Image (tube, rainbow, N blue to C red; front, side, top):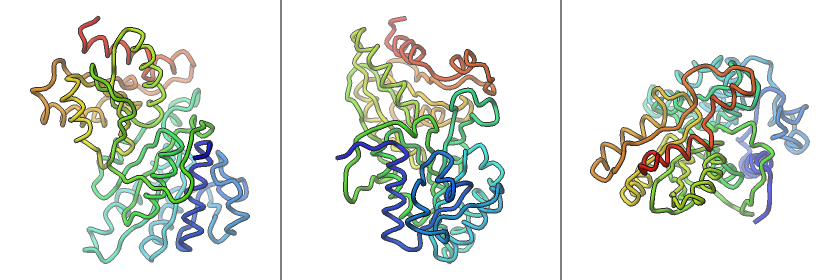
Amino acid sequence: MKELQFREALREAMSEEMRTDERVFLLGEEVAEYNGAYKVSQGMLDEFGEKRVIDTPIAELGFAGIAVGAAMNGLRPICEFMTFNFSLVAIDQVINSAAKMNSMSDGQFTCPMVFRGPTGSAGQLAQQHSQNFENWYANTPGLKVVVPSNPADAKGLLKTAIRDENPVIFMESEQMYGFKGMVPEGEYTIPMGVADVVKEGTDVTIVSFGKMMLRCHEALVELEKEGINAELIDLRTVRPIDYDTVINSVKKTNRLIIVEEAWPLASISSELSHMVQRRAFDYLDAPVHRVTSMDTTLPYASTFVDAYLPSVERIVKASRSVLYKD
């Protein structure tokens, strides 16, 4: 094991795969000469050269289309969006080309590629740079969607994503690029669709993914002070979702809270709530409780940012609610 920043774990995953497979290449805005907008690709241009680490114009629709075409012709591109807010410019290529190419061609073409970059709020970046689209992409058949919460998962899941024969949406938190954690050395992958039971508990199941896992860890500390023993599950991937791990936990704790940074309507937490109530309704001793961002666009003021996002206080309050302690 060695300690790496989140950005270093991502870089290590990409570099290891590029050394092993000459078909893998990286393209996107500022990934080469500038070493990446968040320094994720630092040093990769020097090692792999300008044919495999490619700076693109500010034209997401264009370079996403180039990446799809490259994947159809046998290469394995990693297409970086400076933020997934900008992926909306390229969403036609992601949804109507990459996700559907295998099906439309009756298996004659595949799109083994990764679309990756930061998602969600990163402080006072206002409405057009603070959105979560995990549920949008997870709604699309043909895509896999990964949202890691720590450096070890970031490396293991990105290596798996690069090797996958299907297009993968790989979403990172801009605020976590400097976050440090222990990462296994050597060959290391994590399968998609396998959640991680981070902490076992008996009183309530808390499920989350990505940056919100940090809030959940903080909430666990406060809950323990009140004698509440929560089980914490990190989904890691939101398509496919590991329903079985969540349902088995609910059968044990009889209560469920889902914490998600996205808006509440038609979210991952909505889907998970439906499946749990469908498959484990008789085990529930309280309604499923969701803690999401507020159902509005994100204002610029820091006080509004704090009020908008899921908080430790809201997670603790939800836990008390399902345990009839409020």
